[in-house]
Figure 1 (tube, rainbow, N blue to C red):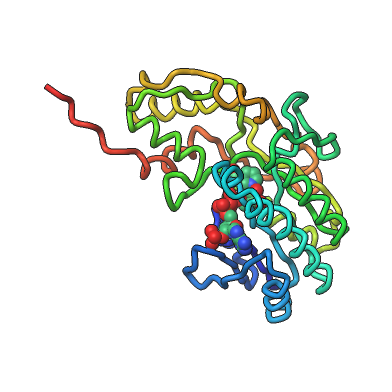
Figure 2: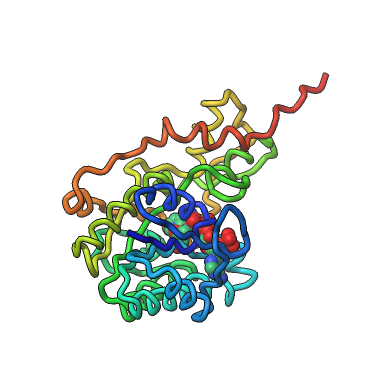
Length: 300
Ligand SMILES: NC(=O)c1ccc[n+]([C@@H]2O[C@H](COP(=O)([O-])OP(=O)(O)OC[C@H]3O[C@@H](n4cnc5c(N)ncnc54)[C@H](OP(=O)(O)O)[C@@H]3O)[C@@H](O)[C@H]2O)c1
């Protein structure tokens, strides 16, 4: 079996490439050109066409996206292109080549006011990113009705730079010691990228067996934590002071961040069999440790 993973240089895509180790995989990158990845602009129909006609994959996973709030704000057209147009073009390509498609979406399609959300719950995004992810879902469904869509909550995992994940960013802030407020209202369900990638592998397998076509699926960790609570856990685990971090409502106050998007994930184990859950408490330390700043000398 052959797979193409679009967005293989990203946090989730790197894990998906590893999880698909029983297939011949081509991974794509855009700006992070390295490690045998093929450079593809997923907002270019020609680039997608060239790759699919060359590789003739059996399954495609779309991990392309733009989830950094600073990019949504500064270059919204670019962020929309990466989230919406890329999804549409990849789905159109998959349909043209008769390839199974797994598209990655987000819990931000929901407003966070009525958790838990089932796959058929009514989306109502609060911000541009959530609206783009929803538009992408619609575009994928229109172009490729048999595609499976997997919605995920915030991810953490082996990062390439401190700002790559929310969790490693928080670890930096804890170890930096600079007084700041951290949101203690919005509940996240940090999920390890390798756990999500294994779900992608199992879903792709189901698609290749002719199952779960046209499905919307949810997966995410069961434990909910605010950013402030994550900071406290990091501080305790590494014996750091967290006195400089105040509990606040920075994210909730803006009104455009959902307060609780817990995803109801019961459908997937029922369809795919048991799926291993990774526990945040045991998985987060090796992820954050490389990004903690060295302890500052105590002034005499
Ligand atoms: N991370 C999360 O917390 C989270 C939570 C829920 C859902 N998701 C969704 O999961 C998917 C993957 O997210 P992620 O966290 O892995 O994102 P990421 O680390 O930011 O990676 C994004 C990927 O998209 C690629 N890309 C960007 N612009 C492109 C373009 N024009 N053409 C082709 N590729 C392009 C990037 O390539 P380069 O880096 O090489 O430029 C990278 O491989 C996205 O759909 C995201 O919305 C993520």
